[in-house]
Image (cartoon, rainbow, N blue to C red):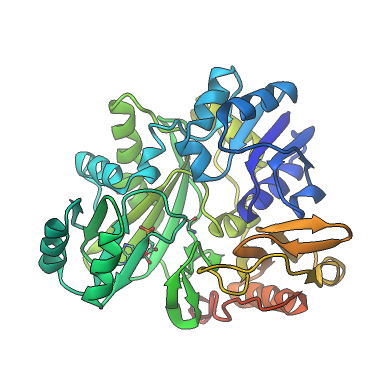
Length: 417
Ligand code: AMP
Ligand code: GLY
């Protein structure tokens, strides 16, 4: 099977790494990719947002499957263009991707499907904003309606800051604050059948102790030793299947990866957000634990034959990933700094710990930073404590001027018995 992956972050590196280990994959391409993905896939240049260009590339490569990684191409209709060219694609249509592309649309689907989520108002005027902020009180949760790479959400006790963020958005969703730990649960679906993956936890804030601004995600781990073993079944029944059924009922079936971002509150599990693609960095830890070869799973989803898929096989190991980000991320990240220590990790730590590239590019013999999140250092171990230790040992070998990472990824969960 020839597979083309669209995107170029650590999530795509994790996808390509798993696909490269799958004996069914005879050729693996990634467009545009990054300096690390080049080790496991053949890179091709492409404008990932240009559906016609992606479809042409997939046709040229005679791809049997195209996997669209990031949200922006999905919302732009890239999966539709590839599907129209007759090539199976893993990723939802533009219409179904509105589940991520518009927070207001997601709220509407959840209301229709009876999916538990925070109460909310969609506001377009300063008067509506003030009324909504007043109705819920602090802490305030203010979300830009459109795509914002994880940075459009402000959660604050400060009314002036909440108001300022809301007034900077064209359309804004203001909602009730949800208390409790967050869980990311991914499901693979063909629009009818839903296959949940293992839950993971992401660390959204930039700094240790969940301080600082929201980011795309600074680290993740799986499994969740503290979670109720019934969590996956419960979320399947209350959230994932009803959402997939509702989108099919509307005539816009969702096929691809449905990502439920959940809060486990004292009043029950609630959806914080949906995404229409694999999460980053949770994918790094979820795929590190998946033993079933990936290509067949994604192809079954693309072809609408997930009901024929045998149950997924997971390994007992725990996985932890730690993101190394540029100086000044998430504000205005500095790029172009050389990265050193990658070969040391390859020599000393693999296969237990390895480096997945997010924002990197090759410059001559050097690999330099090219984005806010630069690397995602991933490790597996017999439990979270061991996976953590291996991940941080590898992190310590990496040298990138001005870089930052959290030191507390999975720390609390590793202490859970
Ligand atoms: P979102 O992009 O909707 O996932 O929001 C980003 C982050 O903001 C989430 O991962 C949460 O940490 C936080 N957040 C979003 N909505 C809420 C809410 N209703 N209550 C508390 N925290 C929230
Ligand atoms: N890890 C958060 C996201 O992928 O949106």
